[in-house]
Image (cartoon, rainbow, N blue to C red; front, side, top):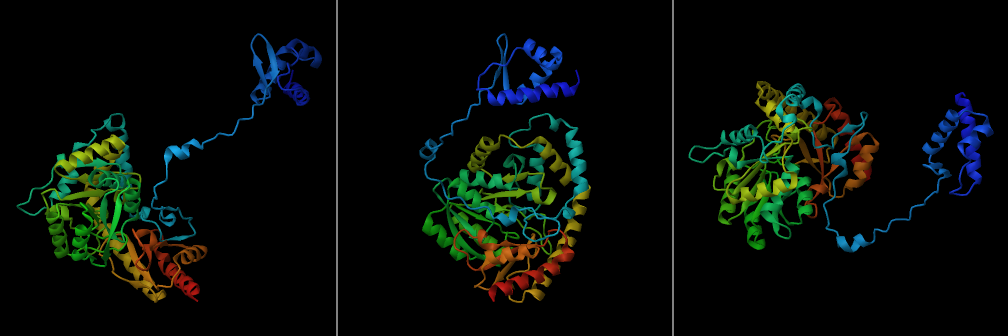
Length: 470
């Protein structure tokens, strides 16, 4: 029989099923063969179709029956309310910072550099080699590949002054990105319910990590030149905190770089207080008119715990960071890290190491510095021209962002929505403050795509600002 004969049987049986009660037995195959004058093969094909549609079910040795439709009882998850308890108040993810923009939008909101600023050729080649190596099938050591540990240690050691002990590979832990590392550091060095001093404003991811761990954040005001040492020392005195999270080089979002004098003052305070400085060197590879000068290189008694990520400078696909610490703190960090992630993918570690040890890496960084300089200056100049109401507290000497202050009466939510409706995405600055914002700010990423459209973006921001203030 043809397919049309099978379909005729299926249609007829469907109509019979529609009028039959659930559980009713279908006529036997022999009876269906006689009724439709079809071959047994055609009837069996029709029954398989009905079974596949869930209309009938076959019971071997018994027959075929109209399938009983079971309406699932709605699940009751109310018991979880008592089991979970009251939720912790977590820092909200800034929606603008992680959103993907369409091609027709001028994207100034993201925290990542444009693909054109990445060493794509090096990365692709590195992944190809890593995929053919033992890293693709083996489990790496929990603390990281020794060669990559050595690279992070030697990078810091290369700027360690004579007379101080440079870090070595055994002081280094490889982590799956700095966000994971911050959570580990806050758990291992601070602990839930305990105070953590933190710059205000600061990296929103650090605020999120702190909220998830449950530490008590204590803001320390940080301006264009960094925090006031007196404010920092007072906060240590009043709270009994034993850790301070900071970004001494090209801070996100402000772009500030601490002076050498401020760095020495902060190191003196953490030593006197018996505390830790958690130094986030996130923009180490993004120097423009200055280079990163890690405080960890100037301190060898274990007061500085240093973290540096390669994710932004190598590739968003390479979530690899290095953490350097000494003494018992390192043991606690290792223990927490292994409990959270066990180990970092050997393929990612091998690819990262391949890129940063390739001779082309240094060439890439030199070219990157030139491109960041041009982009920064273009966007800053456009903001000054088209948004005269704005104030640039500092022209960053490195990093990826401009931190722009707007009039106090600005409604940032309205401004961000209005800018987006006109084709520009910006990041409102409130999410970078651990407490009440100290003013109205927006963060603009000058390393984003289409720098030629920066002047258009600035003009749109200026018009939207004036409309919102009218």
